[in-house]
Length: 323
Image (cartoon, rainbow, N blue to C red; front, top):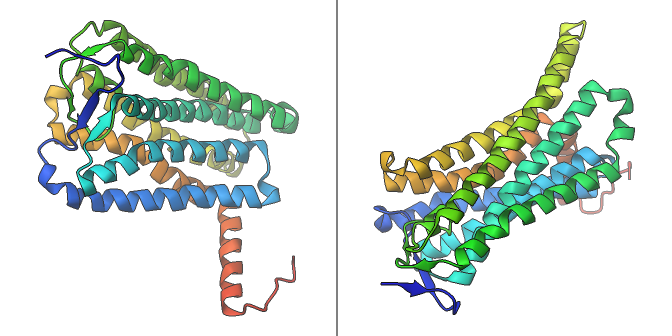
């Protein structure tokens, strides 16, 4: 049966996790726990960066934007997923589906672009430390942020526009959210432009962004190897460690998810869907942990704030003499 979507009244049905429909309620427990952890972790980093004047620097500005992109990605996926698990809310209109798809992929593109900007920040900090404040000031950081935003809009906006032109002969999406390739597979009209554009976006994000990050780290490594002492080498590498771990968390699952879409017959459907969700949520879950542990300024300011709250809770009349 051919179903035209030109009226905008068409409805898709999100199946959830194929083969594990009876376990949806149990699956909601780890996902709701992750949701709370992501909100608390990213929210805490944003709060500390916003309220501590000493952290009002271009580097922490880019970090705050990374946290915002992680929250956007999470809010695009998890509330809808939990409604599906808790209330069997399987139906989603085509407009709602395309909007969800846009924000999921839009946040992923922005996250990747911000990681490139943060790689540039680390390159300047290591290779040109004396000129850091001149090269990477707030103006440049703002321009990098606007470039990331523009890249997200211009790369992802054509995705729902191309899908809106298709005719669908199936409406049951075996997924927990409106993923691009999952919706493309529902169409019975010519999907080649959408498929080709999906590969183009993949190459522009994982391909180009990883290339730029790789160039930055090659230059950083060259500078580190020229250092005279082992202590200086380890200290310099440690300044890049948080960003490096975040890159691994962001790109390895993304590459794996892309390949499983093309080789989906090898992986069981339920495993593929669960991995697709983890690919989106892992960066949002672990980025605050990585930056909280590896960056001394964040760790110190957060501990200071928590200790101050504990003091006030014990002695409401007490005021910190340093303030």
